[in-house]
Image (cartoon, rainbow, N blue to C red; front, side, top):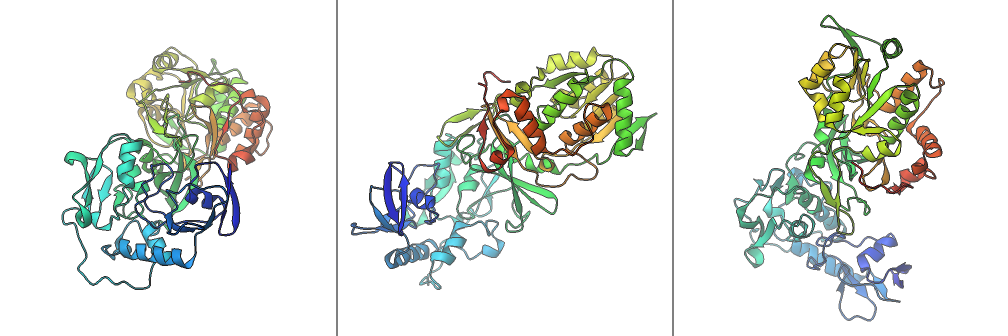
Length: 528
């Protein structure tokens, strides 16, 4: 370990740590544009100039490792003058279009020009422009405004080092150089929108979010991506009850600073809501029900005939699956959890190593650690087609096959209860339907395929009369006589689960609220 002094503050860091990261550890922010902790260091923007005692010239903090007993000044007069000069240079050709730029509010150039720039400019010449490279769609998800580019090359390094696809390159020379796709091919790798995440200005933006909301109006909630078993950390941006975007949230163990395009654009689906209250169906007529009446009807079906068959969901949180295990299996019901491999997904972690998802669900690992029976599509079809008891499907989208007409036909002829937020053939044929809360409306923990337990916070209250699955299971358990009539929450359910299930022993909800994740106490091998 090495100890240095930065602006009078002593800091101890590992050997090889650069001045930017060492200063950050003390709470001091050094401005950067070309530097990103997940990319190689190029030291070309020069905005991170600092003064080091004993060195005749200013040095770039991103490319200078801390030395033992080094003394660094990040806000001296020399540093301020140098940064002001760099800012003037970067703004020399920059268009004055902040009011219409979609990056406004989260633009590094905008922020640092106020903090480190001059009050005026010496620029008198006509600004350089790039005709034909403004508002240009360079791939299915990314729009280029080259006039705003400051040539930091972060985007190029992302395609070279993170996606490893080499989609972007720098063309021409000097003052006329610009970013373009390699050989004119579109930017369409599975992580393409990450280039917009790292762009410090508005040169690259995500088409799907452009002009939907000003970022300073957005509320952001720490959540997880529901797209697969990796469990990428995200900020869920929402405004006035509408989910607008996912952007990756740093977690060095899981997804580093990145996420794939598939998971990113699942955010829009969270706004879909076709079922907002319980109802029953009889003679092709739907009858609205209160929750109490609907649950009473469900209990009569579950207890009044052959052994019920339950299809749970690996999309549910650990707390919901724990409630299913305790209440429904405890009441003698058969419960299966469908598993669907889906398209293989992968992302790089904070060490630059690939993390690969094993299936299309966020919590298959949690289901298995809780002892629930996982089934593939063939076994799921047999389970439903060959059964004769009441069928309870806890998530209409627990498996792609469940959304087909074939699944509805297989369930025909017996009482079928479905929990959903969108219509499917199974929902349209069900005897009883309950509204299910969306991912953004649920708080809970999920276990990744690498055995990391993480917390997704609730961003929005449930729409209409929709309820999260853990709450539905608790209310059903009360009706079944499996639970006393008491107040529960994800926090209390997690504590009970941690006390009962060895894989989660020693974990606390409070720690998960402040930590990036906790490993389970059992080795996870071949999940999915």
